[in-house]
Image 1 (cartoon, helix red, strand yellow):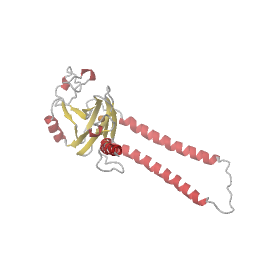
Image 2: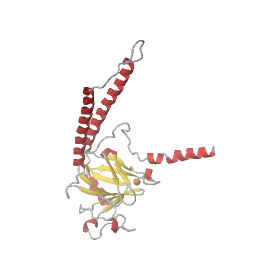
Image 3: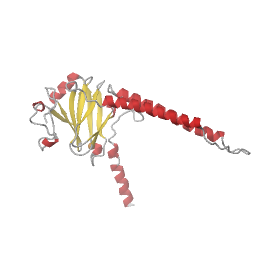
Image 4: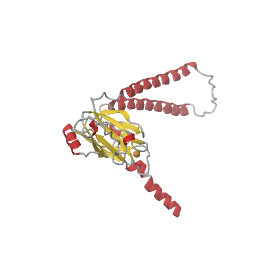
Length: 267
Ligand SMILES: [Cu+2]
């Protein structure tokens, strides 16, 4: 009995921890609202797949139910064997192949457009580092340039490994668990991990990307189309505090953003 109770207590306290990584406040049954310009294209493809799958599901299950009824056991009726049908086989091979090819082409095209890093100088560069169990976020200072950082240069008083030889990094500012971006501006994220694999998950922005130690992932960019307050969560089980690894993700006006960056502290 005692053991059972302790198992129940463990489940009660331990289970919600990973579950808490879910940060959505609304839209739990379907997609949360989309707040980026490019996100609508992703939603369009998702919805297309959803409707195709729904149509297939209803068609297959409906046929199954109809056949159950139509060919139910009846006195005096025997089954008539079917030898095969070329026509049916061609139809059920060609149509799914065509649908899959269409979805592949649409998905591949969208992916290719999504993972192109913006040309230098066209976006605001922000670095997001995952570290058990915080988001360490570095912003360009007044010069608008994000300094170079390198894992090899990391030390206890140089958390993210800022390169002292790069003057652009001298005025960079760092915030913990708070990602603030201006609305309507192209934002280019540089994602890193300072220890283990983490997952950067911002559902309203349609961004879900793993952070890998030793690598900088630089193909995530977005433009927020409205202001608001959202959340980021870690989506990779990264340790005992994983479920607490959340951050605020705020989209503000350009003036508010400039004021906020001025008020943030240096690394
Ligand atoms: Cu994590």
